[in-house]
Length: 511
Image (cartoon, rainbow, N blue to C red; front, top):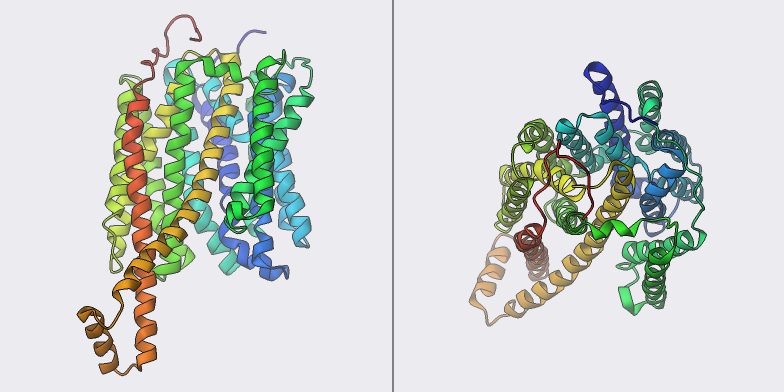
């Protein structure tokens, strides 16, 4: 079957827009429900701790199906798989929106996560197919814009809807978008479907994948609430995840028709690029998680205003993407990625200067710097990762790459929230050592508070509240510092990649 020529003009614009919408829906839904959990649990008469399964169910199912994208697209065709995924995701979103109880919502979220696996890697693969080779960086920039704006807009949109409308609308807004996406893709993309290949189903590999990914996701999502390895439940699941992962690696590397093509890691650029993608997204996700959390719990910001602090990052990334794509064809992308890592590091280090009285502008400024990094890092690292991979290997590569990104984000979320609380305890204990009558500063503060009308008990409570606030601030600064240093350290890893081949460059090889 001859490869269809790239699209041009309005056909290219409409197809790229539909693919971008598919990416946006899936990314948005991975974060939009986070800020609405209290509303959902209250409306359905359930405890907030139980409602966290709304997030966990989606993450577990999505984590299992993302790396299977390559096999699904070979078996059923790239376009068929993507369209079916979007259509089923739209149906699952409708079911989530009309859920009548928490168990039904969790079940529908499990379905939503499972069917959405091929959406992001599929859109990535198809964007590369419809653009001419010399303009593929434009396609990757479109993918980057939608993949990065989604996590920023998710909490804002989720908070606004849950504050002003029924929580079901955070899922129902996907329905019209899904109809538009499926309609446009059926009209424009049928010619790009690859011939379905009758492949044997790797039952053993898939069973082990479900076991280790599911166990790992539950450990990462629930570990903090269960006090990590002080919980027998978490210890057992962690052991299952490790053993199943090792068994899965051995199985997939020796299977004739593996469900996940691990031979892609023989490519130096893919192996290093995927690792950098995972680490870079982890630092980015940790920062995006921590800022709204700290602003809402310690600085008195509402969910909407906390989200707006992060919004400039998405806007800057969106505006920069076309210019980055245009320049990427003439610049060694390792330099572009270097700038991105340094900009990420700068934005995190700027946040280490935060104080309890920092104003809104100084919260927004690091977000603007981070936006310039977002607009360059994801496109450059994706291009480096897929360098010299043949077109038939791109679906598998996108699936594995996005699985690494999702896993990096899951680890970052768990580590960040745990580290934040534990460092707060450390800082508070050290501050408490100074809060005694032998310290003149403490005595002066107590006298001042009592002079303005507080009782001794009230003054003690006020100072304790300030210590807690300061402790969480210092804990946040520790995490921002670590993220900044981590991005600088990644430069050594980045420059172990090969210079990518030019888009028009000769035969495709895999190193």
